[in-house]
Length: 238
Image 1 (cartoon, one colour):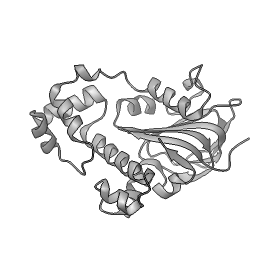
Image 2 (cartoon, helix red, strand yellow; image 1 turned 180 degrees about the vertical axis):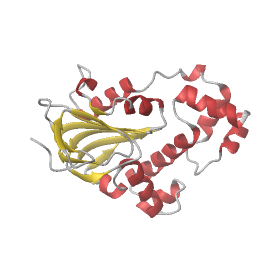
Image 3 (spheres, rainbow, N blue to C red; image 1 turned 60 degrees about the vertical axis):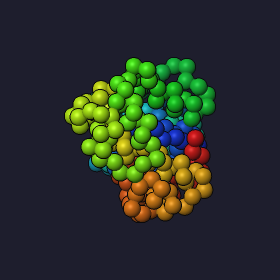
């Protein structure tokens, strides 16, 4: 039986969003990110989705490519939703297998939906180099970026002591995500952190370097297909 509401736990990380819990209906929309949506219980027909041409189909797991108009007609009580920046290594790989993805869920996922979402996220991400193996210039930039607003590549390159082209290469090679999307995800994370602490959307937007709450909402709608206020109802941020 499908869920009539969204209620669960979520967290943002550079390059993506992880959600586990109840997935409710969602009207037709498209988002910038590559999305994985999957039911954790039942048979292969756990979800009922609508495609870009209005066609409906049931499945257990689906990979939605960036920009694809779709709707969730029937969700699930125990489900997961993952979002990946389309420029990230994981996002590019997933886009290649867009559509029904019945074999996407590995065996032995945790019973808790949020923990299951985190476990699948780890599987889908590239193995990253340990922090000690990262280029020292990149490490300096990663320590310097959190909490800042919009940052230009030239500023970050100066902190790293590297050329802009070299720093861009290191972001893609070692993090699997280009510089500009990485910075945007950090700002979204900062805004989400402030909202979880009880700040208003306007305060969170300004604290994360967005011009106002409308700007923050537009970015969220572009990335995820919904606004921060819509997403935060019934959802606990980890």
